[in-house]
Structures are given as structure tokens and as C-alpha cells.
Amino acid sequence: MDELIIETKGLTKKYGEQYAVKNVDIHVRKNTIYGLLGRNGAGKTTIMKMMLGITKPTAGEVRIFGKDIRKNEKEILPRIGNLIENPGFYPNLTGTENLKIFAELRGVPQKDAVEKALDLVSLPYKDKKLYVEYSLGMKQRLGIALAILHDPELLILDEPVNGLDPIGIAEMRKLLRQLCDKRGKTIVISSHILSEIQLISDDIGIIDNGVLLEELSISDLRNKIRKSIGFLVSDTGKATTILENAFKIRNYDVRSDEKIFIYDLNYDISSLIKAFVKNDIEIYDAHVYENTLEDYFKEVTGGVGIA
Amino acid sequence: MLSLIKCELLKLKRKKIIYLIILSAILFPSATALLLLNRRASGSPAQLYDELYINSIGTGIQFLLPIVISILATILFFTERDNDTFKALRTVPVTSRQLVLTKITILFLSSTLFALVTHLLSMVLGSVFFSYNESPEYILITLANGIFIACGTLPLIILNVSFSRTYVFSILITVFYTVLSFFLVALSPFLPKTVFRFVPITSTTLWTAGVLGKMGKLNLEMYEANLRSAIPSTLNISIYMVVIGTVSIIIIVKLYERWES
Image (tube, rainbow over all chains, first blue to last red; front, side, top):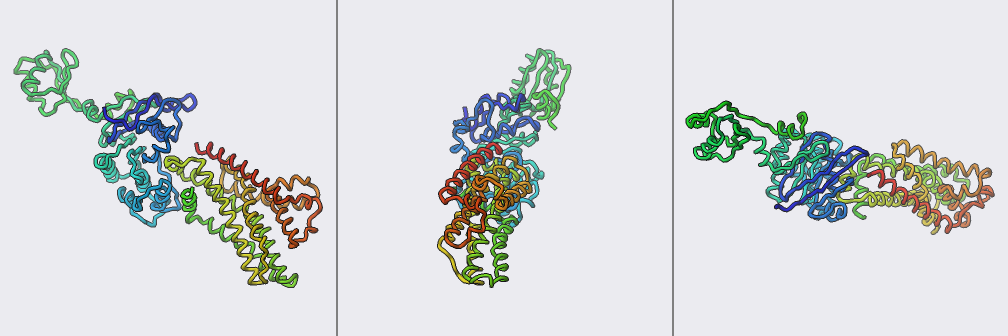
């Protein structure tokens, strides 16, 4: 079992009679990127706010670095960087001045911390532009710069690519991946953009209507949404023997007496059919299935698509 | 705490209203000096120096400072709400209590500074136009006024924070409060003594007059008897201001904590 950086137990938040978050158990492993996927209003932001101790849970607890956040804020919060919803900064100050305020408050000892943070998100240092004049994308970058300013071990980022252009999104993805892979950070991000989560995360939590429906690793997810070849054959036993002996395929799934799904896509469908026919297996149907994350999301949430 | 204060001051950078506040500190002493220049014959240069000082305290500090403090308080207290910066501060972590206490500290510092600037300006103008006649008590009166006015304005900040309306609302309510405080003095024959003791600004005005009267710098006969008997002792007003200040601070902290959560 990997070391867990964040663990929530039965995390619940009720507003009046309405559940915003219900009984959520999240497990974030050290040195991974955890993607929280859900529609707008699914409860992602509320979960993140509870992780940071900004919002008080109705029930359950959040353990970060093995300790209850609500009882150890002073010790835990300085080790976390965060961006929740839209970044909030002082409009009458420049980006550099804004970050300097937070560097001062956080007691960051390195003199060049602000410059480095701005550099990482490709914003100019000591630029004269005031925050009020920033574009949406620049505001977002500054928000990320603030999150990484004090070189925290854990980053909690709510919709970090919001408002960024496609190139900016790709840059941000690269940056977060680097922070995780090269500098050993643990990152939790949330998004309603399926492809984004799929591209960046190691683990994924799917949340809908405040309930964590599924938590799985990206490789499990790949298996689940993978394109597959489905056969309807007369004898699945014989067919699997052929797959294993002749093709060395082990990645298959027998769903019933007749149905067999092959996830190994190294062989094309015609060579498989030829082999089956040669061995007197009758084929009633052969089909290549394309499953997208969106289909999977629909399937898990039991509803319409995310967009 | 020191870095919190430093950051609060940094947040005020480029706020035009701050220049206006600095400018307003110059307004009353300068205007009074000009008025007195025009009636130079009404007294000796030393008397004019005193008159300039007393008027500067009465107008520049007791009338203008509550409005300045209230505007400043509104800026300080609404900044986090308006810019949505509270969550970033909260996760530093800075608690709302630390934040609000810092903001109140800044109010007291600014109030004292404003009073000192007014004093200094009246001193310079008085020396240049008339003749230097500073009494050692003056600086203490100025400092006490700065602190008392800050304490006396805190109850208004409770109103601002609890209604959390707009800047216009806070400014209007303070102007109303200040004008009312001055108006009370004019209504003195018809009001019970306790009113003057309990309205902080009126009480500060009376205390200042009392001290100046004892120094022989001000003729208290110009005050009506009811008003004269309402003049608080230094001990009384100090205790009263400490109580008003402490109670207000506790209420503001509670309100702000609720407001930001």
C-alpha cells in the first residue's frame, strides 16, 4: 500500500437538508496526481475546501499527512499550496506585488521565490501590469504561481486550467506533471473536462451529486474504457485456448458462454477470425468496440454526458 | 503580526483615496492659518499660535478624523470580501481574528499619525506666520485625541461590518455621526449631561476643552453651564475609551469571523 497523503473518511457536507458532499472516502497516494472528475456542482470544490479546512464538514474527517486537518491547520496548511475557484488577488497591485504579500505572510525565506514561481507559470517578474488589467488566463497563472510559491509538498488545485488557451493548458499539464515526477509533489486537481483529467492523472475519482462513485487508477481506467474486440462465438473455451496459445493474448474477458472480449489490440480482427474459423469455431458476430471516457462517465454516473 | 501590518499597508498601494486622506490632513490647519492671518490684529502672535493649534484639533482631528478613520476602515474591512482574497489568506493560515486585529491596529496607527501630522502642520504654520508658542502638553493632547477618536469611531465600524453595505453607506453614516456629535454641543441646554459623556466624540471635545481651560489657553466661560459640568476627567475619559474600544473590538472580531465564514 502506498503512503496516503490525503485520506478522507465519510466526508459529508450538508447545506440545510441538501447534501453537497455525501460520505466521500478519497485516497490520494504520495507523489501522484489525483484527478477529481465531476460535473459543475458535483461537489468538487466543497471537497477541496474541506481538505483545506476552509469549510467545516458536517460529518467525517480529512486526514492530510496522516493528521486531522481541522486540528492541525497551523502545521499542515503551510505544506499545502492551493487554488480554489477563481484566484483572488488585490487589483491595485501588480502580480509581483501580490505574490510578495503572500510570500511575506507565508514567511518564505528565499528571496527569489516570487521570481521563480512567476517564471514557472511563464509570467514576467516585476511587470508593471496591475492585476486588474490581467486576462483570465494570466489571473489563473498567477493563482498557480501563488500555490507553488512556498514550494509545498501538496498542491490542491480546483479547475487549474480554467480560462487557459489550448497551448496554456498543455504547458500547465507539463508543469504539473514535472512538479509531480521531478520534484516529488503530490497534486490533487479537479476538472469537469474529461480529457484533461485523463491526460494528467495517475488516479481518478469520479464524483456526481456529492457522491464518490468510483476511485481508480488510470491504468484500471484505461482497461475499462479501452477499445475492445468483441466476438460472439460457438465455443469460448476453444477460442481462449487459441488466443493464449497462438496469439499469446491473455488480456481478454469471457462474459458469457458465447461472448468474449479481447483488449489486446496488437492483432487485427481479420487474423483472429481466420484463426477461429480454421479451428472450427463458428463466429456469429465480430465487432470493434470504442469506448470513450465520456461513455464510461455516463455509465458510472448513470446519466447524460458531462458537457 | 508585524508582517501582517506590513502586508495591510502594501495592499493600500495606488489607492487614490489614501492621497485624498493625506491631503485632508493638510486642509484644516492650512485653512485655519489663512483665516487667522486675516485677523492678525485679534491677538498676540503667541495667542494666534495657540488659537491655530486649538482650532486644528477641533476641526482637523475631532471633526475630520472620524470620517477619515471610517473611510479607511471601510477600505480595510471590505478588501478581502471585494477581491475574494480571504480564502488565500485563510490557507496561509491567517485567521480572521488575526486579520481583523491587524486592521484595527492599523486604524489606531493611522489615527495617531493623522493627529500628529495635523499637529506638526499647525506647529510649522504657527511658527512661520505667528510665533512659536508650543506647550509641552500639546503633544499629549494631540496623541490622546488621536487615540480617543479612533476608539470613538469603532462603534461605527461595527455598523459598517454588520450591515456590510457599500462605501457610500459607511461614509454617510460617519458624516452623520460626526455632525450629530457637534450638533449636540449646540443643543446642550436641552440635553441631559450623560449624553455628552456617552457620545465619544463630544466627550473627547469636552475633555480637550477642559484640559485647555485648565492650562489657561481656552476660556471655558464660552461653554454653557450644563456642558461645563459634563467635562470628563482624564481618568474618566480614559477608562470610558478603553471600555468602548475593547467592547467594540470584541464585537467587530465576532462579526468579522461570522462574515468571512
